[in-house]
Length: 179
Image (cartoon, rainbow, N blue to C red; front, top):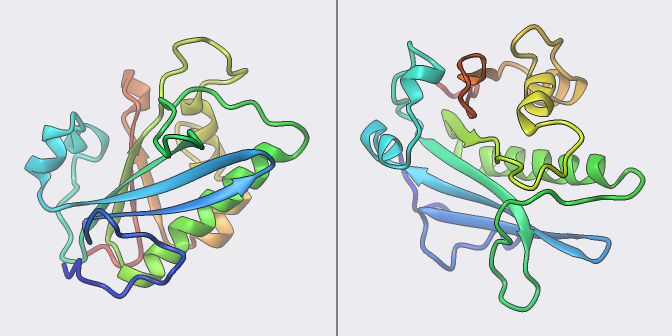
């Protein structure tokens, strides 16, 4: 996998080509979608993600794997705010989801990743109406839920799996470049 890509100006690679992020603003909040290149399955395991428990047939694709993170950014420190629940008014949550999804698609179009991995953050303060696991399972069509329109239409051919039925919070999404 060639991580030395020419990233468009909307992506920031100030931390090197293995760690890419994009900021966006919604209302008075700044958000970041980050991508970290994962070179091996061992590296992924070192981050606490047991990919085999999420997808037992997973193999490391020639087109690479990227971890995805998303959070609100502290506007003064320009750092993540701890992956806590973020309240949105009106259609704010939907707009955030669309921004994250479009950023993932643009990242994919730039690098052709074979897979993306991420975890659903825990709501330690119990502020969410629904656990992120339920939201992600519904969006991705996992564990008995019908695949959401966004994933079904914008990510055609991508396949999702998770370990959420056994109490985990990990997700693997393989793309059309997965081989």
